[in-house]
Each structure stands twice: as structure tokens, then as C-alpha cells.
Length: 116
Image 1 (cartoon, rainbow, N blue to C red):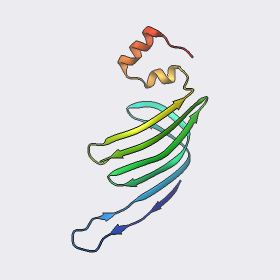
Image 2: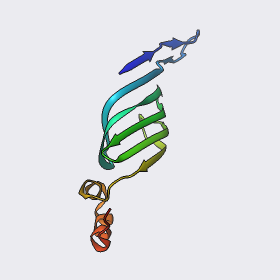
Image 3: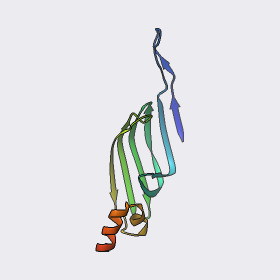
Image 4: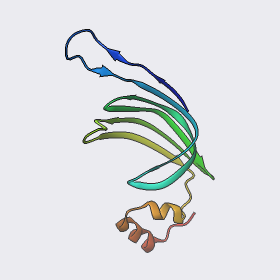
């Protein structure tokens, strides 16, 4: 991982200290707690200026599946506002995907039994 950071503070009393971070990484794995589908072979670029995070570009692949994520997360330290776009291609309809779904959606999966 490559990290570039700064410490910035304007002159004057009670001015906040800002610590913007620019993160670049390769060959990482990640998983989102609310949709636990593990993704491997990730690389990307993220900019952090707390409490906000800009996901400039994350790409990953796992077998035939490929993923690209970009967007923003605001107020990450309190009640986050999430605006992420996730493009996924060639994701297999398998048990790994099924297990990442919430219980009601898994029930629908069992009714329709998708394959492919």
C-alpha cells in the first residue's frame, strides 16, 4: 500500500487540524459487513479527509467475476451517508453469492433456484 498524507492547519485560534490521506493499494481482499461477499485481487485509490471518504476507484476480481466500485462515504465517524456505485460482471449464481444475501432474499433464491 502507498499512503500520502498531510497535516494542514490554518492560522488562527480554534482552527481544526486536517489530515488528508491518499491511499493506493494492490493485491488486497475486502468484504462489506452488510453484504458479506468476499472479494479478492483488489486494487484501487481512496482519498480520506475525515469524516469523509472518496472511493475514486476500486477494482477486484474473483474467478470469472469482476467488480468496480466508486463513490463516497460521508460522515464516516458518526451516521455515515453512503453513495457507492458497484458494477459487477460475470458473478456466478453460486452458494457464495447466496450466503451473502439477507435471509428473505435467500428464501426467494430457494423458491426460484437460479443457476448459472
